[in-house]
Image 1: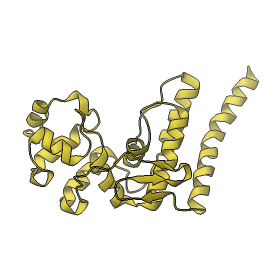
Image 2: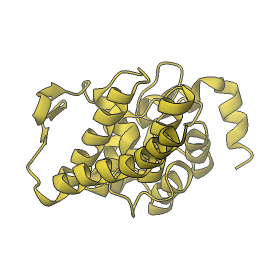
Image 3: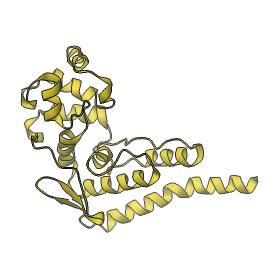
Image 4: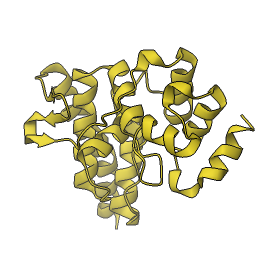
Length: 210
């Protein structure tokens, strides 16, 4: 029994060290991994193409800065300080999966959500989570924070089959994204964590309270 406890203790300590070592290696020996094409991105190590990008593209510069800050505040407060992934979240996710047989949790950072949305399925497995982290790291290195935010607001799932801010603003508020009021934009950001829980009418009512 004691041997088993020692093994678990060693494993718990070694697991995060292993992931940190791999990610640090990739940081110190970078090579371009994301190819930007007109209508999609390509993850070069796997030659994996993203889903097609939305045609009605919203430029980040078209949105007020406080709106962009609101997205970060609600979706990922540590966005400007992490490298695309959260080590503490990775650690707890792996432990929950390996020792407690729980499902792999969803992405916790904006960059991981973008990686999943563009390149991966919704399958919840360790292998998919690891690939998500690798792609998130590549996005951070090759695109940078501002571009990641721009890709995010144009790609993220907004419920009811809608992806990206243009589709969401047209569906929920019957207007182009550049015509949105601040409270309407805030309402759209508020529903991102569980977008399919809200009807169009509920989102409109939510906007009146913000």
